Amino acid sequence: MKAAWLTAVLLGLTACGGGGMERMHPRSERTSEEKVEQPVRLVLPHNEPVLPPHSGREQFMASCETCHSARYITMQPRFSRKVWVAEVKKMAAAYGAPVPASNVDAIADYIVWWQSEPGQRMEGAE
Ligand code: HEC
Image (cartoon, rainbow, N blue to C red; front, side):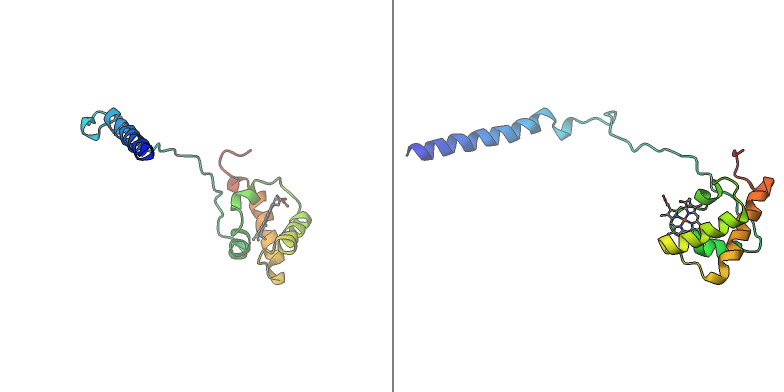
């Protein structure tokens, strides 16, 4: 008998607890002026380099754009052709970049050409 009484009290308390929360923030009392969290819209700068048409561009796009942005490549210091050839080979050997051996030179040449064209440098970059 005592157990049944205790259960009734506990059930009552639980019901009050739940109801209490509802009473503190009744939906019906919300006004249209009430601040509802709005998503914040941020426009972040996105400076992708312009990669103009030139021989080797197609091969470059096919092999170098899947894992990181083109910008990640063009933001590198101006390296020699030899270094770029090694870099392209490294991407293929170390990370599995899809670079057919016959395209290595074309890709390196494209990057070297791009880097040597002052007008093609990324906007804002020195
Ligand atoms: C399969 C994925 C993948 C592809 C495709 C790829 N890369 Fe990378 N690349 C990476 C990873 C991973 C890193 C970062 C290495 C690190 O943080 O040490 C990287 C880094 C670089 C860097 C920074 C210097 C360095 O050696 O870490 C350059 C430059 C670069 N890649 C050029 C290229 C070029 C050019 C191509 C096309 C031939 C290419 N990547 C294609 C995965 C890839």
